[in-house]
Image 1 (cartoon, rainbow, N blue to C red):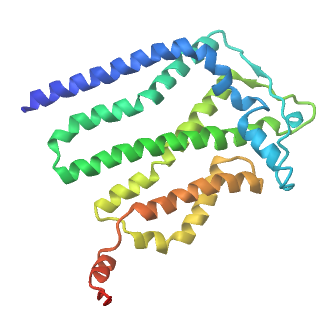
Image 2 (cartoon, helix red, strand yellow; image 1 turned 90 degrees about the vertical axis):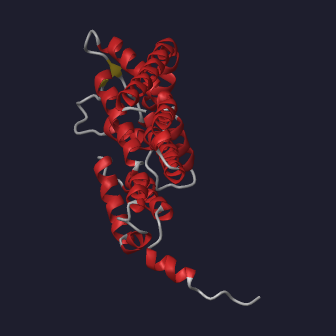
Image 3 (cartoon, rainbow, N blue to C red; image 1 turned 90 degrees about the horizontal axis):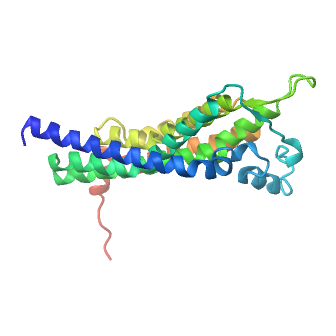
Length: 270
């Protein structure tokens, strides 16, 4: 194929992706009024699954913070005339993007795969699949763990008894999207290390050497993500961040020296 043929093929790839986004955005506009309260606004309710889980766990682990419904009362308000409508549109589009990711990856794979050798195609296919899975997993961790813990801390924090906490819809949605997107991007860390390993820049010994630094780095990262200073929130957020390091250590290549030594090990006689 000539350059212009490739450009034409890429144009149709973009058209199909945009078409899928538009179709799912329309679907989002239809279902959003039914799922907005039960999914997007769910963390503002004391009945949210994460709060109920830790409330039940606190019966057996008394050192956990107070997750009872009585300690959590959120009043949501809207102060701008267009906010509810724009939130309706943006939430529908976010719904479309999330559910279009598998199709987008498939279309990109279809476009690049003819130009790759078999071994390259296998690696790129793995990268697309693994990257998409980790992004969705990061978003789920953000939704069920990071955002609820941060939101609950900030909404229950009291500087003065005379100040009543109320949250605007704008503020809620901004933090909701930001934190979930951040976690989705952070969970791409294993994919980044895998790519660096395939380029010969990082090997498994790197992770063994800097494991203690990774624990400290995960703790610092958790402290930056979570504004609360309580050990429980730091511990809960630190665990998934550190697990990314261990996953990365598992999927990267071994050092060439180690592989050579293993290959030269004598085979024991049976």
